[in-house]
Length: 121
Image 1 (tube, one colour):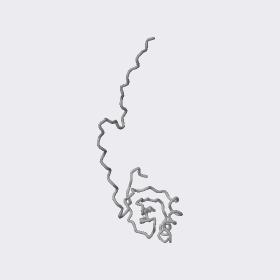
Image 2 (cartoon, rainbow, N blue to C red):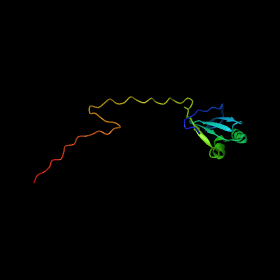
Image 3 (cartoon, rainbow, N blue to C red):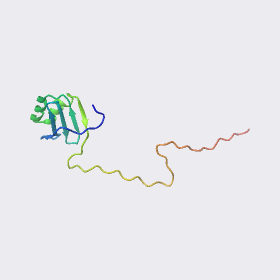
Image 4 (cartoon, rainbow, N blue to C red):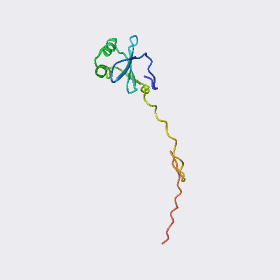
């Protein structure tokens, strides 16, 4: 399982579902990729062709996915893609203007303290 994010590589067919957006499947490798309406995508391994066909034929694809696929096959999360029509993520705002007193970020600052005076009795 790669440690870096990957994007879906199988051709995706849109499906009629309120939670699943599209499904890609390779019968040769047994790999099924599922994209969801929330923008996340997953790749499932060693999925038999009959499970893929049952998903496509299910009256509730989300219910079938949760019951028969979600916890039944090894998977990897693919890179999350923005939802179609979603507004782009906001750009970070510029940092606030510097204050008149210096600040230290991410470092320890040495502070000079007055030395204690010896008291003679």
